[in-house]
Image 1: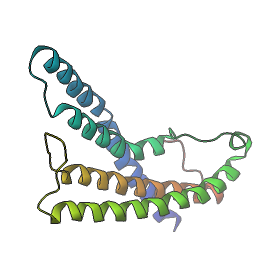
Image 2 (image 1 turned 120 degrees about the vertical axis):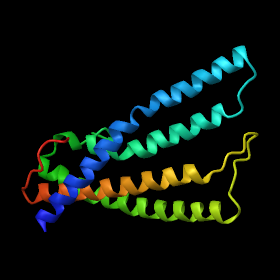
Image 3 (image 1 turned 180 degrees about the horizontal axis):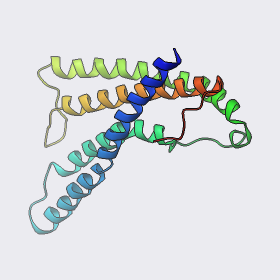
Image 4 (image 1 turned 135 degrees about the horizontal axis):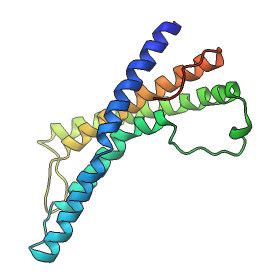
Length: 173
C-alpha cells in the first residue's frame, strides 16, 4: 500500500508541478490583455472583450495554479498553535483537515459538472455582457482545475499518512 501511495504522490506531484510552472506565466497573458485594454481605450476605440478576457485568464491562473500552490505549501495557515507542534502532530492534524477539503472538492466538482452540462445543453450558454462569449470553455478550465486540486489533496493526504507512520517523503519538489 505504501508503494502505491508513493507512486501516486510522485505522479500527481510531478504533473501538478509542471502544470503550475507553466501556468505561472499566465500572469503575463493577463498583463498583456490589460495593457491592450489601456492602450485601446487611450488611442483607439475601447475593446469590448478585454475586461472579461482578463477575468477568464485570472480564473485559469488561479484554478490551474492552485494545486501547485498547495504542493509548495504556499497556502495560508493559521499558525496559532501549529508552528509549535511536532511533525507527526502536524501530519495528524493535516490529515484530518485535508479530508474536509477533499469532501468540499468532490461537491465542487459535481456542481461544476452540472453547470458545464447546463452550459452545453442549452445551445451554448453565453455571458450576459456586450461581448457575449461562450462560457463552456472557462467551465472546462475550472473543472480541470478542481480535478487537479482534488488529486493534489489526495496526494497531501497520502503524504500525511506516510508521515504519521514514520515514512518521510523527502522535501517538496
